[in-house]
Image (cartoon, rainbow, N blue to C red):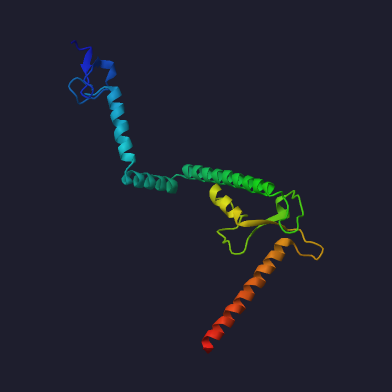
Length: 196
């Protein structure tokens, strides 16, 4: 075999010298493995390194350092974050609108509707079903979490009726009255228990 070819130390194939990268410290001036094997080996070791916790910590430290020192990078990260929040908010608002349409865009108490704008109705958490967050603050929540929260809510109107009270306000008043009644009952039970 002439000097035009060289055998790769990894795959064992004889390949032209152009298939090998340069290495100044080797006697023939070329690396022992061919370009393909070198590339495959680097990809393999990179994948192995990326899967380790050390790699994750190193990347995190690098991003944090760059964020603190590079104004352009910081602005790029902030812009990406704002764009993501805007996309999530738009997605969540469309989910809210679709859920209102699925429920007929009407108040579940008095039946007024159909609602034209978001300010005409509210999502009121039903008594005893728990509340993770306000539906109006939907910027960062996942779609699944938002849908679960909507399932706990009643669609009620914000428009005051003839007596000057909206159904949403009425529900809050009823909840406060119910909570006050329960508190009185609990106090009465506790008082009876202390007498015995």
